[in-house]
Image (cartoon, rainbow over all chains, first blue to last red; front, side, top):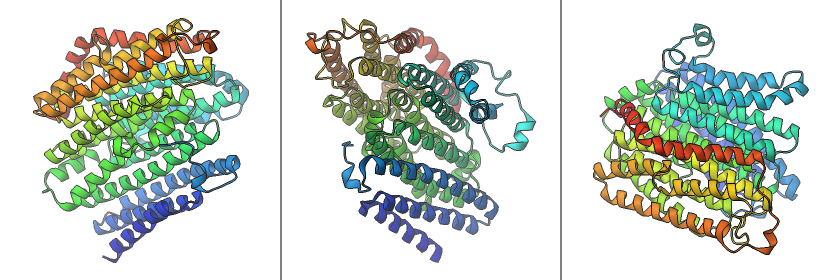
Length: 97
Length: 477
């Protein structure tokens, strides 16, 4: 039960972080927290079903992919900073969605 | 041999970046073109010669579970076709050879990822290949490192990461229920269970993740920005195939092989599909940017595919798959046309440009064919897939949705006629008197795709009769 509460708590923190912060780096940190939450969920589900070998393989792959994604995301943030001299999300609203 | 479709692009990417970079840079274009042509050709080879040959050497090293059915083969063909188009267009639009080499490298990576998605037989490999595709498209969108590209790439990264998180949560819960990640094992575990809260939660998580990836209407925020801000060859690649494979194909695959249809699921799919089809078309009506209009049109056409899937019958799924193919062809064609117009006039604003038909006759002709196919005018290819989707909806008893699909088609015709009238047929503008037709590098792919639209349209009765037979076994009655 404590595990499930931790996962849900991390999930809420991550979503809150993405929604509230204006700094692009903070948005990335929020994404990291979200991914950590689901990684914990995978470990928890593997532990509950006595399927730890599968869960381990999945978790290691998730971590690797997460690193690749965050590297690209950080590169994009560096690019935005070079062009704009600012990391504030309010300054880069040139596109209207 | 399935593994080769993933491994060959991947290892050629590695080989291209080993020593002899000068030589590699010159060879890269031809090599990639041959690879994509081979992939298109392989789809037509009978199963025994290529698809069923088992290589124990690869199977021992790489533990992917891969398989191909008719749905995967259609998608593999589209991947080859659209990548080839993007490659041809990049030759005339990305001038610097170093940049073009980088572009080809990332395209190869994305193709390896998408082939993996098309062949995966287990939800976790599906996730891994999806991420490979997604990461390479982040880089492609920000390829020119201008602020618009970077901004839209960041938007896509955030939404795609949220989609990933939802998807892994769905995978974790399915693993909790079934104890495995294999499609068939999960499917049989789900059949033996009653519908409970946990199962509905995981299905909901999966659906919302894939709706974000496909850019369906409530989750579409990133899609018009990404398509508009990306360089022209990348727009072709993204609009033609990446979102189709990452969102729509995965949705069809997960529903057919893992979850199975039920009434609530069909209800959700029909609602989201109809909403996207209508509101995508309405938003496209108000756009004045050529590429932005095409992006909203993409959302609307994805809505059609989801409507076909939502009917829940073999006929509907066949129509949806045929529409994936048709959409890949006509949307790539229209993006090639937009690239030609942009490269010649330096602008994408439809309101500013008038009467280009005289100066750019071939671009005008091919874009008319593409627009009419998209709007579903017989005998072009787009008509047949829309017809199959509408008939499937009607036969399945969703008559209201069939009517909505017809109305959406009229809206599609409306915005494309407005586009054609302003861009090509109005009184010529003095400012654009000296425009010339685009070069061979942009006209040849446009002609090839236009010929494919007409050819597939005329051959459609034959394609349909061979096609729908293949789908009866897939949906299970």
